[in-house]
Each structure stands twice: as C-alpha cells, then as structure tokens.
Length: 114
Image (cartoon, rainbow, N blue to C red; front, top):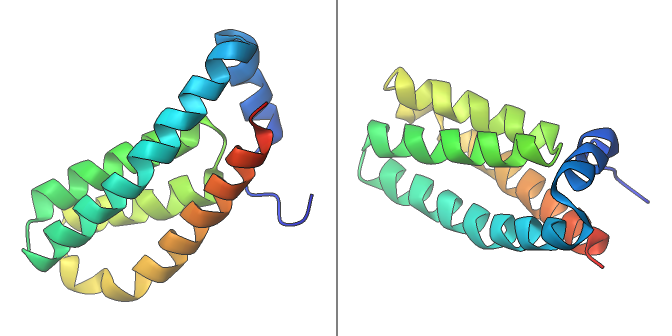
C-alpha cells in the first residue's frame, strides 16, 4: 500500500474485537460522520463558535483514533485544543492538512472493506 495512513495493528485489534462483519459498519459510520464533523468545524469557525468547533474536533479526534488514523487524530486534537482555548484565528492554515489526512484515511478505510 502506498501512503499508510492507518496503524494497522490498531485497526486489526478493532476488527478482532468487533468482528469482521461489524467492522464494515463501523467504517461506513466513520465515512459518513467524519465529513459531517469537518463541515460542522468549518461552520463553527465561520460563526466564531469555539465550543461547537471544539466538540466537532473532539469527535473527529476520537473517531479517527479508534481506527488507528493517528495523523488525522493528532491534527484533530490540535484543533480541539485551539477551540478549547478560543484561538480559532489560528485554525485557518491548519484545515488543509486535516482535510488531506481525512481524505487519505477515508480512502484507506474504503480499501479495507470487504
């Protein structure tokens, strides 16, 4: 695989715990929810709503960590902290790397579905 976005050990542990059939449902839920969370973050940023921004970033961080998407989780964590500290003015340049990490992780997860 080219650019490994996921920690496969984490993904395989999740798969072992949840079962092969259920992992696809978990992946589908992530693929559905993650873009919504990103959209929510952008809307909150535009509205200067630090609390909503922080909550969406927190959810994205946690959800991506579940699958071993560590780069995405780390970037979302940075966003969560900026929201918590009401430093939304520092977010703008950090969104493109977050979006790119989300796209890469999503593509890789799609490839792991059966």
